[in-house]
Image (tube, rainbow, N blue to C red; front, side):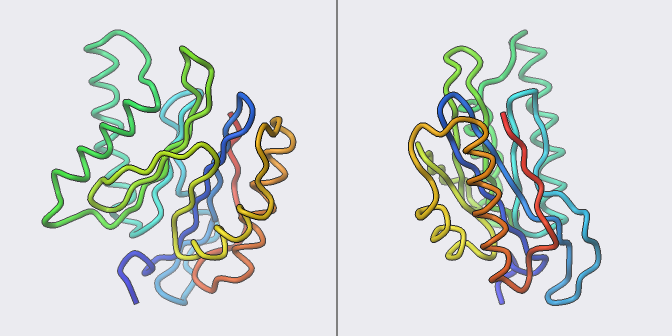
Length: 190
């Protein structure tokens, strides 16, 4: 079993028409033993910017704290709100710095660009290789199940209500087919 699956996790991000959403499961466990059922893997970095960290729970919190520090320093130095593309590059650099002893997380970034009002979703591997998408990105222990559901249900130009329903159905149905993630989901809509 991979160290990325040690705690179990599932994160999806989707884009719609001038909206974006990110969802995660709530289970925290050690292999097949459940410890908590209210452990979120998605954190806010701004009013319209969220980042999700599926993978090892300790690295999840460490990477988020380091990213939050860098984001706050950027906003103080530049005197402006950070864009989703910039936070993705910043996070990619943070992960690549540790490429020989990596953090065991595969981050997902979702947000709305405040200058263009366009949705942005991206994911990356544990050394920071970015994959930007126009539709959806998935990461976690049940990626195959999430890909199948997303490819079936996602449509172009969904409004916020349709996007919420789509991402909710995708993550809940995928979680039903995975033993190390689940116990409900939390959805953030922007």
